[in-house]
Image 1: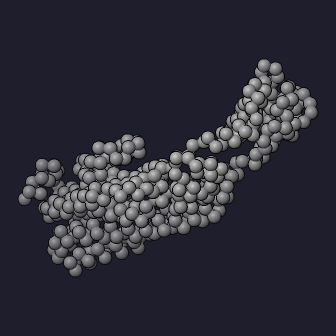
Image 2 (image 1 turned 90 degrees about the vertical axis):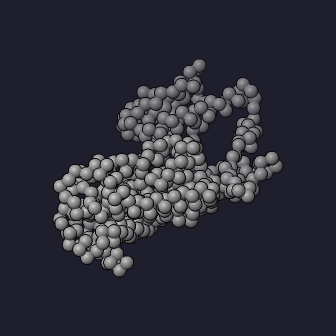
Image 3 (image 1 turned 180 degrees about the horizontal axis):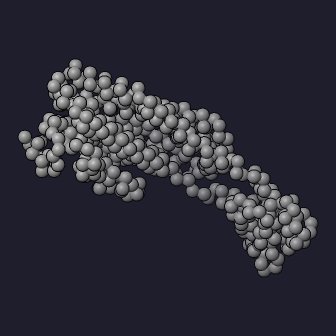
Length: 443
C-alpha cells in the first residue's frame, strides 16, 4: 500500500503543478463567465429607443397604444407621405399607417432603417387587443372591466406535486428536473472520458518510453495501475472542485451585475391565487409561489429541488464511473503500442457511456420508461442514465441497486484490467485482438 501511495502522490503532484493544469483550471470559469456575460451585454447594448409615428384613417387607434421601455408611440399631425419624409430625416424610426373602413384590422409599417424584430410583433399584439376590445363593446355590449375580471379569475393554475412512498406531496418542476439531469449527465460523460483518456495516454507514454520496465522492477503492475488510476482521479476531483467553486462565485457575481428585471420570471398574478382559495383545488402549495423573484431564489424556494441528494449522487457516479472506465482504459493502454491502435478497443468501450446522450430526447420525455430504467442499472451506462433520472425521483432500492452494481462492476474491471496489464505492459510489437485479451484475462 505504501508503494501505491507513492505512485498516487507522484501522479497527483506531477499533474497539478503543470502549467497546462493551472491554465485550464483558471480559464474554464473565465470562459464560462464570458459565455454567460457576452450575450447579456450584447442584448442590453443592442436595444435602443424606438419612436413610432402612428396615423389612423379611422382615428380609433389614436392614443391607444401602450409605450414600452424601449418603444414609444407618437401621434403627430400630417399625412403618410410627410411622416415618411420625417422618418427618412431621422425624426422617428418607423411610421405605422392603419388603414380605414373595412381594412381597419390592416396596417403598413414603414421604416428607413430596419427596426428591432420585436417591434412588428409588439404592434400586432396591441392592435389585436384593441380590435378585440372594440368588438366586445360594439357587437356584444360587454363591459371591459368585467370581462378582464372574468378572464383573470377563470385562469387555471396547476401546481406540479410529486408524492413519496408515504403519500407526502412536494412541489416539483419537471422542466428544472430535466435540465439539471441533462446538464449533470453531460458533465459526467465529458469528465469521465477526459480523465480516463489521461490514464490511457499516461500508460502508453510510459510504455513506449520504456520507463515502465524500470518501474515494474520494484513495483507490481497492479500497484502501478491502481496508483495511476487513483492519482488521476484525485487530479480530476481537484480540478472539478476548483472550477465548480469558481463558476458558482461567478454566477453570483453575474446575478448582481445583470438587472433584476432580466432575471425576473412572470409568475401567476396574486389575484388568481386568492380567487382560487374557495375552489376544490388546495392552494396551500400554490399560495406559497413567489410572484416575482430571481432565478436563484426561484430554484431554492419554489422547486424544492433535492440539491444535497443530487450532489452526493453526482460525486458517487462521477468517481465510480471514472474508476470503471479508467480501469478499462488502463488495460487497453497496456495492451497496445500507440494511441492509434487503441481506437479499435476504445470505441466499443465508450459507446455505452454516450448511449444515454443519444437517447436524450426519449429520456427527457419519459425518464422512468423501461429502456431508461435498464440503462440506469447497467454499470457501463448507469453513471449518465441514473444521474438523469434522480431529479425526477428514483426509489431508494433502485438507487442502491444501481450503486451496488456499479461498485461490483468496478471490482470486476480492476481484476480484468490487472490481468491484461500484467501481461501487456511489457509486450511490444504485437497487434493485439479481442481474442488475445480474453486469453490474458483467463490466464
